[in-house]
Image 1 (cartoon, rainbow, N blue to C red):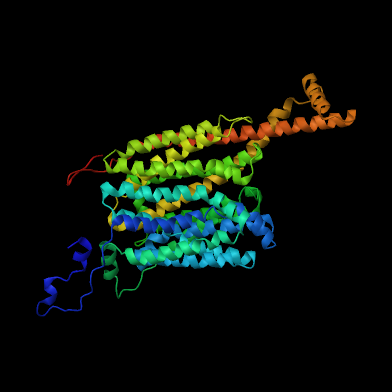
Image 2 (image 1 turned 60 degrees about the vertical axis):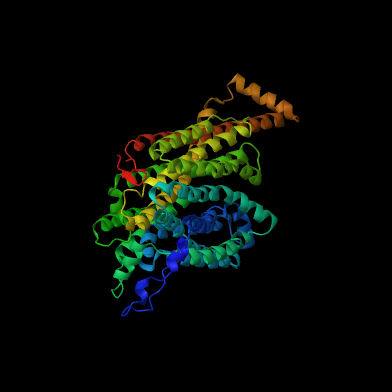
Length: 546
């Protein structure tokens, strides 16, 4: 009799006198790998939607008679909703049950994806995107908690590898897939493609997923008791994270603190976030258990992933722009040029998971990954206006390889020293930190790119004066190459020279950004020394190591 049949077979005790015969059969036990593939499907769908709409904004604005500025709320609204739900997903799953929460999230995400596709106005689309973000935001932390419970510690690395492939490849493929769908069909299909995936995921989730014993016992213990809701903490967390996301996403576009809306949003964010931290650390049953950050491994894993995703999303934002603005690529070609990094990750991450399953020290892999990602990011800062396409592809591949080498062991060791019943809360905090890292990276890169371009342009043009013989000679040479009247030649020569100054200033600003994020990554390396090594398993004996 196999494992599944054993789980369904009635025990002899059920037929003894005095023992009820109406006992419910135990749920069928599925192979953990089947569970991993099913739940990762939903995560891939949700993460894909964080970036798939980026390139479709002009089409959405034109179709719904909105301005380009108004259409950006399609992205902002989704990110704000995601930020609100991520940290409280652990508490929700403890109340509803992890299986019910995950299944409900998939079903609602699919419904609101369809609603986004048929939205008649921009206002309706933004509302549906908020609902889509709220329903799908809990999928990422739920998957990490599910995998942490489904796999033993020594096999968790391979399981997290499957999850990592999804969260790394989805943002890379999103813009390319979204551009292709928009160009060949309609922007509405970037939402419709979620429907078949969501239906399949919901069907298989209902079949294979069950709550772990510790969650089932906790829910049974609460039966008949009123649900305790940390209303104050929930309100503070929701308001603080929503305001923070708005500031990060819209700050550069609205001139930061020169705009009253951004100024007041910042004040609200600071007050609410500080209030939430103080409240959640002292309340008895917090909606977000920040006390988990007292555990050393979990704290430094969160800091490392914050820095790494700040650099990843910043360069993901900068590189396609660099290729389009200075290298003359179109959007689709730029997207295809950076896609090999995602393909390399699909091959690399399972190998990293296998190494972890064979007992490789996770801290060594994390250190190697940070060094590799730093090298790839710094390599990007060595570019120029004549750089070949391969000199942009290979640094990006090296950068994402480093991320893949780090993300799997981070996801593995962060749970090893936490109580099993806190895995959902920990996964929610970890996912929030990762997503906020992306928002911070995009905000920093867009702000510093514009400001450093202006600074370099001022510096480069300081010596361009009419009294400089070299400058005047260059203007005449440029004008002569264009042809026309003498006065026109002078003006054309000056315009050409100014264009060259602008290009050089923009190039230097891009290179500054890559160096900045390489330095940020390098600062993460000492934190690896502060991580505790997870216990090694030799046969059936667990050996503690610190």
